[in-house]
Amino acid sequence: MRSEPSATDPVGTFETVVGLLERWEPGVTETGTAAGRLQRFLDRGLNDDDDGVLDRDVVERRRGSNEADVSVNGEIGIKLVGEGGGPPSTR
Image 1: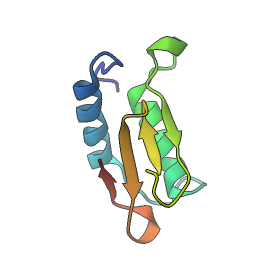
Image 2: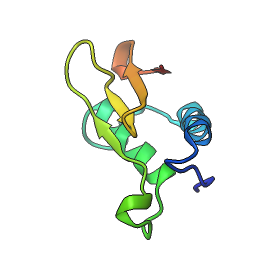
Image 3: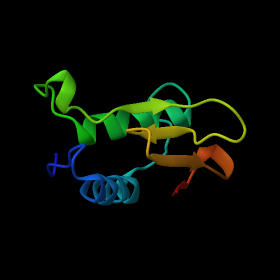
């Protein structure tokens, strides 16, 4: 379910990410870390399978204590806090 954010509409992308975060359930029904599960969830929510490489929102994991755990397009940082890596906060 994509609401058409794009690299040329960073405000729309941010609002879509916030909406996705509000719906994300950080349970352990999937394998992997909370950051990995969040990355996959956001990637599925932001990108259609048939999006071209240049049309996709880039959702990637970051490592390091001062880095966001997941970033979107290098501009939206999400840091997982608390037990089990949730709930996320957006900067």
